[in-house]
Image 1 (cartoon, rainbow, N blue to C red):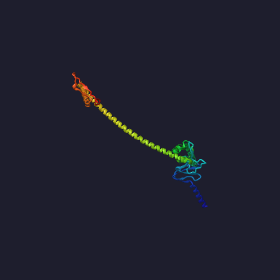
Image 2: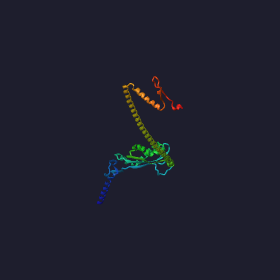
Image 3: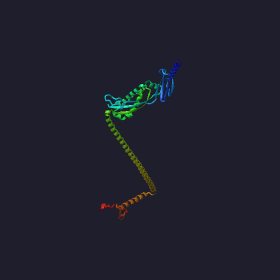
Image 4: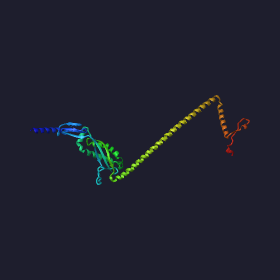
Length: 313
């Protein structure tokens, strides 16, 4: 009889021990009692009611990766359309594979939603991601898809996919979207590779031409700046010389006016002095000769312009 009592006590203790749970540091837990949430314990030891009364659901809080779309390792079957093979806007085909990263939302209510429907999270998220990718690919030509898809598709999908999955109340937070594979079907892959290489060569030459044009433009701008500086310096020099000449002229004019005030005939004397210098210069060059020996009785000076040596010949 005592043995049965001990066995009963052990069974009761074992049953009570089912209410004890260890929550790891990277885990979060939700405790429900008869279907109602009663606690959200963090890391550590949780002691509650035994099995059948309390239920402890634990989930690891980490980023989860989900691959969606075409698989490059899959064997191509021309009889069926492969998953992830999308139709472009110009009626061509493109194979697209996305990698989605999401985390479990730890906010009150969101963690419970994830636990309630975690078996359908990947299916819903994958279906919505394929829909968004199909919309982007269908609105562009195959050249645009293959050339810009790796950069533009993740950004475009990241702006729209969170809103799409919000209505499903999955209890997750979308962290990142990347393109793992993007290419043409195997039947035309070589042709598209050749086109891509040609376009890459074109862009390379365009970049080289732009760099050369930029270099030439900088050289022209440098020359323009140097000429502008020289012109400005020459302008300042001419202005300085002109002001100096003007100041000298004004000073000489003032001097003449003072002399004229003292002697009214001073200007005539200066004029005859200058004319004498001019006539002497002309005489020295053989252009004029003063014939003083032919002075008339009335005292007038007689000048005679002699012909040049060429005229004498």
